[in-house]
Image (cartoon, rainbow, N blue to C red):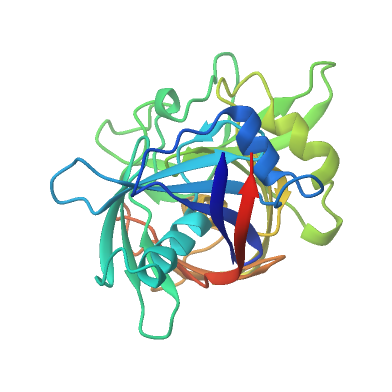
Length: 309
């Protein structure tokens, strides 16, 4: 099979983008792995496939494959590249488009300065929907009261009062060794967020895989390591599910900011946080409890070509 491809990157998170709007394009796991291979293929963190949508009012369908070959639910940096791609290829002239993923509906806006804003939808806290198995664990709660607290939270004196803060859950390795405390949530894909004193010195390469494949996460998890610089600024590294550490992770940045706000680490008005990833900066906004999360950042073309699979 001969494929035309476009290589793109958003804050260093890199993608191979394929056009499936003109004819059906089905990739096997082995073919996705080949495309993502940095020695024998093109090289990418993920493969993005642009497809037509059959849903009224939705512009495109957006499929995402990790470098492992697994199809996954969401990728924020990829979504920004997606909108730049469909504009450049003449697939739409709209600056605001709607795209559907395997489990989500996203609104993407191409800004006048070339940056892209993605409405990442509301964060998910219910453990069954993340999914996260908390059975037998005792969390530590931290942060201010939160009006939208999960019903899974321990009862709070005064039945209708909001639960205080957010849970930090202790994780242990198979040998019983403590791995640390994480906040868990979903941005359409599962995330575990750990606060560290210095993200540059964090043991991402060793601790990341242990969290990613931890038995408490039935569908595995993206492991985020966040260093709080101020109420409006953080450094972040993410060990992504099925991809390893990447230079940036859009959903990971959103998860880190939401967790930080709920835990009281972040949140100075207007709850806009600058996230420094290794590949570039992202701006994350969560204007109010119950609101959707918005992410703004760059998306760039790198090169294009053809490959035989």
